[in-house]
Image 1 (cartoon, rainbow, N blue to C red):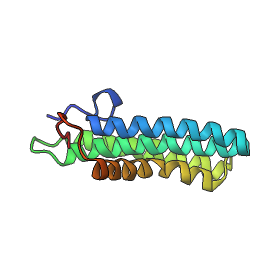
Image 2 (cartoon, rainbow, N blue to C red):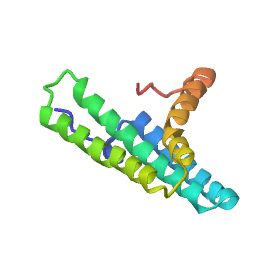
Image 3 (cartoon, rainbow, N blue to C red):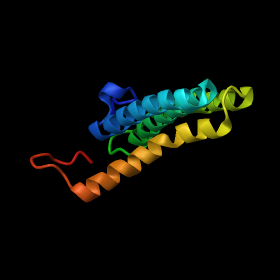
Image 4 (cartoon, one colour):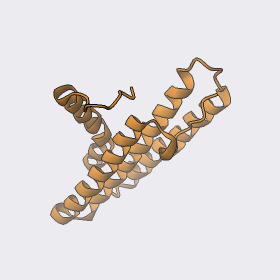
Length: 137
């Protein structure tokens, strides 16, 4: 049975690296946005980035539950999807409907994790795998 349901400490290494990099980049960018544009853009970007990382982790957890050679747990899959819908889409809806932050700041922050995935893939393609390190996936 697959035991990983989304918490960062038990996620596969490559998922952890993407999530941590996205959180750090999102925090630094939110601080810079706060200094440059004010609190609303920083709030929207930071909240969007946090929801984007949570979405990435939950999506990875759902995929690991679905794509497995072991017996699938329909209950766990349904629970993960329900959490994703309530937390991620509910959080996004709350941010957008309440107009606490500009829509573009939320969408940009939410998309940050996709940019990190692309940059990490390009870096791996251009630089290659470090010597003595096996691929984790």
